[in-house]
Amino acid sequence: MMRYDDHPSGRHFLQIPGPTNVPDRVLRAIDRPTIDHRGPEFARLGLSLLERIKPVFGTKQDPVVIYAGSGTGAWEAAMVNTLSPGDRILMTETGHFAMLWRRLAERLLLVPECLPCDWRSGADVAAIAARLAEDRSHSIKAVCVVHNETSTGAVTDVPAVRHAIDAAGHPALLLVDTISSLASMDYRHDEWGVDVTIAGSQKGLMLPPGLSFNALSAKARAASTSAKLPRAYWSWDEIIEANHKGYWPTTPATNLLYGLDAALDQLQEEGLPAVLARHARHGAATRAALAAWGLENQCNKPSDFSNSLTAVRMPEGHDADAFRKVVLERFDLSLGTGLSKLAGRVFRIGHLGDLNDLTLLATLAGVEMGLAVAGVPHSRGGVAAAMAVLQAA
Ligand SMILES: *Cc1c(COP(=O)(O)O)cnc(C)c1O
Image 1 (cartoon, helix red, strand yellow):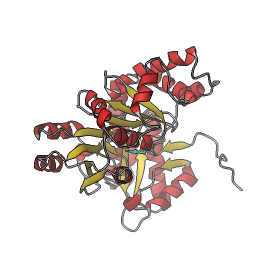
Image 2 (cartoon, rainbow, N blue to C red):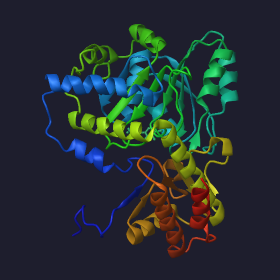
Image 3 (cartoon, protein in one colour):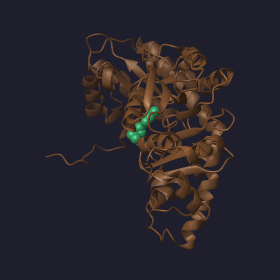
Image 4 (tube, helix red, strand yellow):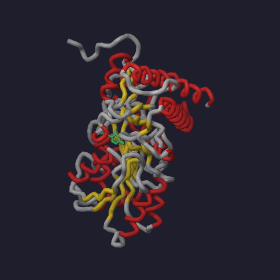
């Protein structure tokens, strides 16, 4: 029987859009003894992290709440801290993750109203604006958007959504999921006027899964004083209170916080603008490869192209998962699967987190060889097209 860790020589290529490759320095940082989370050494770590995480979100406000939990937990936290049972919220069906968030909202007894979308672009901001303008009684309490829809590779224009809310003179909160865009695509919590930013550790932040985040606005904190959804573990207040001294009310994920410290070092050394530029270059190179192969991007609106992943449509009659299986078995390369209604129809290339030009080229070479091996109709030359983009940049 195969063991889970049987593998060929060389590194496995984990090119799914999260979890992403964890840098060696982060792994080494995690591999240290767990310390007393009520002791003085921990408080120094906690205080430093709570400060150093802020620029990644583009916020100077206190605080960024850090949870031991997956991204889904941070979705829930954003809602239970700001909303009340029966509250109407406005969402857009940009893809699988927007739909999961809607289901979570329904389970919390919120009343989501979901604007349609073809799963091939970001949210339709004009439709959001129109709905808010109509809502003269201000029954909509929050607008929720997924910044980077990881199932389709489509980006929503968050500043435009903010503008739509303001132009309508609407008091709704703006909640934004940045789980697959933070630290890989431009994002500015304060400047864009976001009320709650939701993030996770395992994508652009280059950590293993297990931490998630809420960045807050003053308006979100004010809303939390009257919000009536039941909340316990996710309650901001107790965490913020304990954070003042560098602690958490419950046992924090100490070793993941060591990892976060190392990941922040790496982001700081490269510089956030350079990190974003690298992702932009890798997004462009991947799209050049797609064009050369003659394959179609699931996102069909160039202004909405994601720089952290590309969802590739399979030619009719070819199964994306059969192709992914060939690529994994032959080249030890993991590509992202198609989710819910895109199952079998798309595969996703993750190009976010800790990667460089050659990592991307090797990934694209694995895809190009896999297309040939699996007999998927395509033109050669995708890797060459990506090389041309990368060497020019
Ligand atoms: C990965 C992802 C999630 C889910 O996060 P979990 O950590 O699996 O709970 C939610 N939203 C988006 C946009 C994602 O990419």
